[in-house]
Length: 481
Ligand SMILES: Nc1ncnc2c1ncn2[C@@H]1O[C@H](COP(=O)(O)OP(=O)(O)OP(=O)(O)O)[C@@H](O)[C@H]1O
Ligand SMILES: [Mg+2]
Image 1 (cartoon, rainbow, N blue to C red):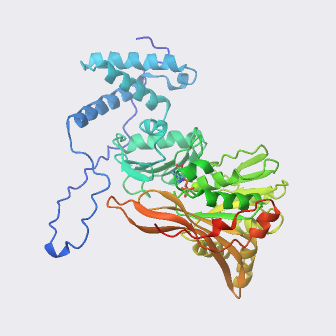
Image 2 (tube, rainbow, N blue to C red):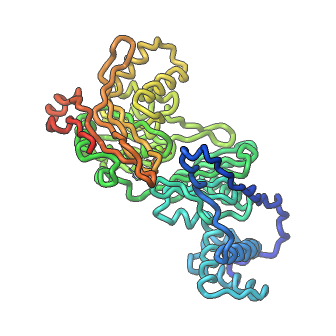
Image 3 (tube, rainbow, N blue to C red):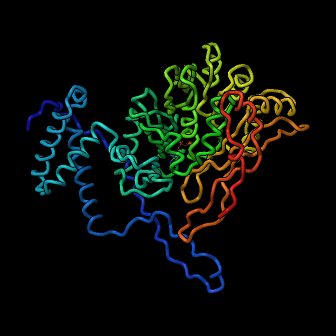
């Protein structure tokens, strides 16, 4: 075996802790008493581990061989020399070490298995181990790891259990550590959770034991190189052509827009798509925790806030970025998500000449979104009477767009609501479009359609003056078929 990257023999590191493989308790099916038959049968567990079959056994065996080989590789490869190795060299080296080990152990593998093994080992040594396959899979949106033995993935809005696993908690921790140390962070018992951005731009969050009770928890939002645009979203049924025309008018005429929605409902995607309606001549500044937005315009300044380092220093909060952004002569400011004290500066920016600013918030409806804003202001320690807070919100925000992930996994813009002012102490709103649900198909797909509510936009005249003369017909409700 040639050994350009082989390291000098050193003592084997002692194992840190024992594998934490746990066997899930078996569930016994329960008898359904006759009188409960009115109820629908409880849905099958969404993701059952498939019964042990031949294929699974083969995979397990491969897994064991891989782990064994991985240990051999780590013992034999000079990791510091790897940085300068070409991919081809490294693959050859891994393949040579693997062949030698397999031969020594009298393990015979077919050509295909050997190739898979080498490429998995390559991922393990240079990349993120088992996660690599999922990161490369374009159909996967989210990767959710619940301890070493359970990796869920989200495809088309639905969560499914993947057949990929880590060997044990130590293996998982090693990969987490690799990710966070690459961005100069640390995660351990005293800093049990961390945010990071993977090399490919994906958003990464990890929480390790003992705060994570059954093993480390990892959540990855995959970065899509080709973000979904307005046309894609219309085509996927996220909203209609009429709604797109309305949103275009709203963004182009510089209304301040908030995209509200639950977690993973498509807020960032919607915000990104809406930004395509901004004129190319405008200077846009974006502020995010993890840079996800991909604006098409030429004149864009991107900022990423930063948590404190391990000594608790160096934090640059979203609010710091926002305050600084106001000194950078922006035409519009886009804040990836407003969740804390930056709300004050965001509302002020919206009120003071940065019309057309946009952000997202976590809320389940437009009304709920307003309450969230009120709460954020209160939490920021601003002593202001509620009426003043509300009047500040109502004059800053023009439009709330609600994004939702429905129970069948589809993502839709379920409501577009305008804020029209104050009536006494209450913020008045009018819904212009909504998604009307009418039922459920036998296979649990939602039946519904988008409709206007019949209310004409309060900004119709503004749209007309800016050259976006929308036909009155787009405000007409559509009757259910
Ligand atoms: N209408 C849609 N149709 C299909 N996929 C969508 C749609 N909208 C968003 N997605 C996909 O869903 C995933 C989640 O979207 P996004 O990141 O926009 O959600 P989010 O609400 O910002 O989530 P978070 O709360 O975690 O920030 C992404 O992978 C995105 O590509
Ligand atoms: Mg988001």
